[in-house]
Structure formats: structure tokens, C-alpha cells
Image (tube, rainbow, N blue to C red; front, side, top):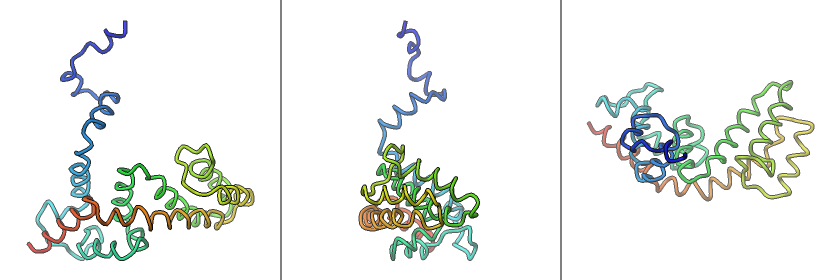
Length: 196
């Protein structure tokens, strides 16, 4: 009797950790993404909540750093918090596989030579293979070329695909990110906080 399983009213279920209910609630309230992002960023930037002025500490993000993100995608990706914020933005656009692949490639380049082949296979299966769950948007020739290169894995075997994804992010997602509420609200909050 399927009706018996779902007989509880939704007010009772809201207190539980029922994943189906959570998924439906999240789908019904996409406007809360901005508030959730703001809460997330505030947790990463302690001085916003405490009213402290930005210090020279590497743990605290400054308005100047966030302004530098607008100079180039490279400057944004060179900053750990920038990667996180941009990743959240890409997730909101359903294209987080791009930054995940780019970061996986950066990590791959630092891999010991004995582990290259294993790690190359994982990255290929996760992002490049035509049946990959997080398939990146690259052309057939690049996909085939990458498949050949990982057979004799080197630190540069994903460079061609990574460059395509970087260019895609730079020309497509990055300009939208700079105009997004996520970026502009963070920048405004940090600038207002620096005036305190």
C-alpha cells in the first residue's frame, strides 16, 4: 500500500532528514540559493560577522583580493576562496564539472610518476569519457587524443582538454560570474565592512 508510506503530513517530515523531501524543498525554493551562498561565504569570512576590520591574516578575505578576481580568470583560480566561490556559482549554473576537471588536472600535474596512469584513468572516466557522469564539453578529436595520451600517461596528457575547458570558462561562465549576485554581494559586503 504505497499511500501508507507517505501518510505522514509534511510538517512532521520537515524535522526528519528525508532526502526526497529535501530534494523537493530545494527544487521549490531556488531563490534561497543567494541566501545560502551568503551564509556560506560569511562562514568562510569570519570578520564579516564579527565586525573586525580585515587584517593581514591569510585566513581573512579582503575586498582587494575579490576585486583582483575581476582582472582575470587566472587570478580568480589562483585563490582558494576564489575557486570555492566560482565553483558554487558554476554549480548554480549546472556546469561545476568544468572547474572540477580543471582542478583535477592541476592536481594531476603534481602527481608522482608512479601514480600517473591510475590517476589519469580516474580523471578520464570521470570527465572525458563519452559516458562520464560529469562529462566536459570538448570536441571529439580532443576526446580521442586524450584517450590515446593516457595510455602512456605523462603530466601533460590532459593539457589540451584543460586548455579548452579553461577557455570555455573564461569566455562563458567567468563574465557571468562577475555580474552575478554571488560575486557582487560578496564584494559589496567586504567593501562595506572595510569602511567600518
